[in-house]
Length: 476
Image (cartoon, rainbow, N blue to C red; front, side, top):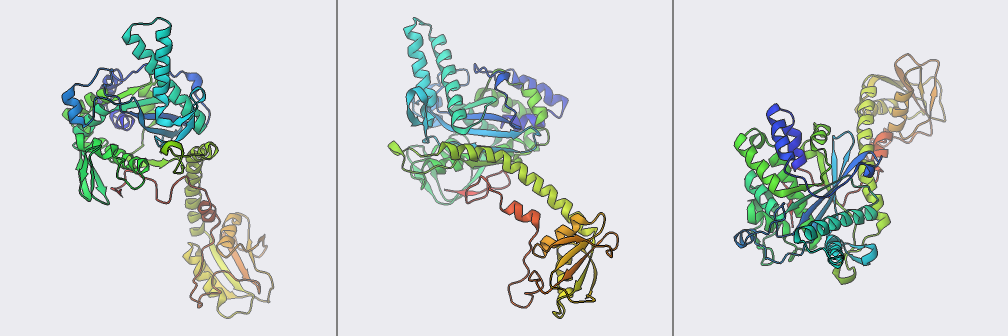
């Protein structure tokens, strides 16, 4: 949310001043150096939601604040929200993949445990190690053990997902509360009413605008949901999408009073790794909008040990890698489709019936015109042919291949009698493509080569479309 705000803030002199003010108050103790940069075509950011009962500076929250947050004093320093944000180097689009808190992962020295316990296990072990070395200063004990825990969590997710994390960002309960207060709430939609005493979530079915304690209850509830934490992840994703949209609204970023409140809330909310050049990153992100972020969840299975979730590390690595790969493929497919559309419109196609089937040339020409080609003539060929073919001349080979794909992968060849800027289709006895089933009720089937390749691409999504800020999706 912070990064998206910076994109808009950085477009004005006033905004740059505010960005500098904001940047100075967000530094944590996580030291990620340039040696972690990886040439995979993307910047990988680990986003953490921590249930710690402290503010961004590590100060304990007072009792009255805990009551407003609907949180007990205990907490567990557990990272119940873990999201890997993959941003391609062109900065135009991003994909976020959630890691369920109960996913069982190998933690090396600690064995196999739920992912959300990684930070705390290392934190406790590091503190015990420091105490054994004679360190007694509480501030030093807390700082060094927290740093070790966060770095261990990053390393665990890197090994599990097969990525190199370049940046780290963390939000706490209080910060989340304040952010929702500043933006005036976020619109959500529930499929069914809920009443959960554990989180304090008590909402009717339908659309609600939630902020402060209600917003926290909405994103924290997992008891009573059909899929438990998996449904909670979906809630978090739809809420973050709506929050991003709200924070990027003109009303928020053009209002000096709102902007100051937002910056204060972000400083209380967010902790970044100390080597992150936020201003340079904001420049890279120019042009991104809230709808350009898509949310996914890694593939998991229920019924792991101690109610954990099972995940195949190899499958997770492929999934996370495909988040970037398939995005590039889709971008290329879109470009190819646009070029194909222009090429069809600029190419005249003539169809000659060499099969003896009455009216076939006219029907096929109509089909090709529907695909976007410029219609030429439809006529009978001078002689019958057994094999269909699409003939082209210099400069029209690609258009001929598009026409051949539209007709069911008819062969193509050069033809001396083909006029410049045109292609000629000859329909032989073997032709069974569009136009032959005009009256059977089956209809013509488009067989565009580019579209078929796009359809066969493996998309790293679930059965539903990815969550974006394009609308309000109703959830469990």
